Image (tube, rainbow, N blue to C red; front, side, top):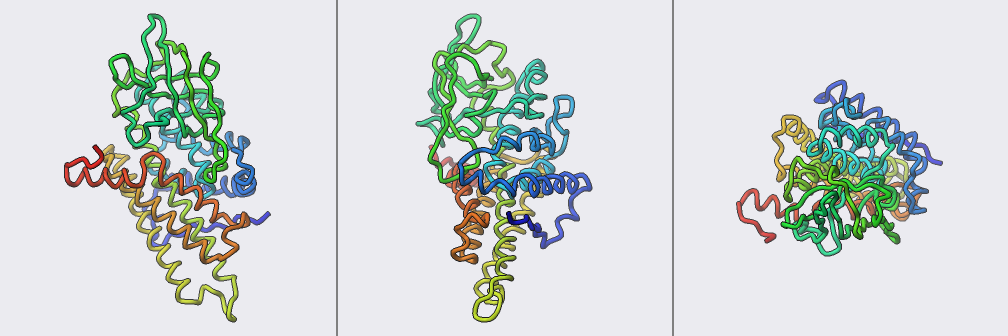
Length: 392
């Protein structure tokens, strides 16, 4: 088993802009990934299994709801700390980061933000500790980029709600204990419901034969006359804006996470280029390889600065959805391009499981699509600067 020799690039001394707490949180996550994720992740990806053994470790480094207040089991950290944790986890693997960011931003966040005090006390501590794992049901077979067209619905039956419908491409679905599900009431208004494992009519079949996010469990959420207690409705907000606000938090985490994958590809390619000898010298000494490496580092540095500023805005509750979309789109795009360039530097070795690059590249093909496709995020920016929606 190869040792994890990762060294994070910091060309503009961005560490100097972080607080001691930021660096401590980041370094703890980095060391955990080196010790617990790197040794097992290639095999997990080859076997297409989620390594459940890491759940407790994710909880211990604060990856589940890091910005949730301590009274509910969270770490009470700021948004930059959250971003740094996601960066380090995705440096290990995008699928593992997906598990953590779904738990944090798509399950714990809506319960904390829009739930009752009883719901917070019942679910958040167990989600923070990893005792409960959660999933988020928004995307449907016929409604992806247009979630407002969802057909999943619930009807008021007096002492409970009756939920019907299906969600797909759901991270954590096969093993989730709870699911935050978005559905329309009889008036067509979107609400969030907490659905628990074991409710009759609730099933979570796994999605197989994926070429991407192979170390992440993906599945469906199927509801056939599921009786949901009325106290499981999230009362704090309704309408499409409610789930979209959760996606803002998740997309923020993705913007940071994608840079982790990019940094890993860059670091791997740089080390390989210095060691690989061709024509009597390391290939790092050839102009085209230096061009690739220099451009990778330039894009990573720009994205790091973009993330830091976005984190500062999030800490002040001033970051807009459009700003988050810009960062998600840009950073995933540069990450996937860096993965492709890094693979070329490694030549044939780049496609093997001996190195992480091809796994990152395949994973990023999903990341560039989920939680807002590449094109939709571009149009969100277009709407923001022109005031004219192009996706309606």
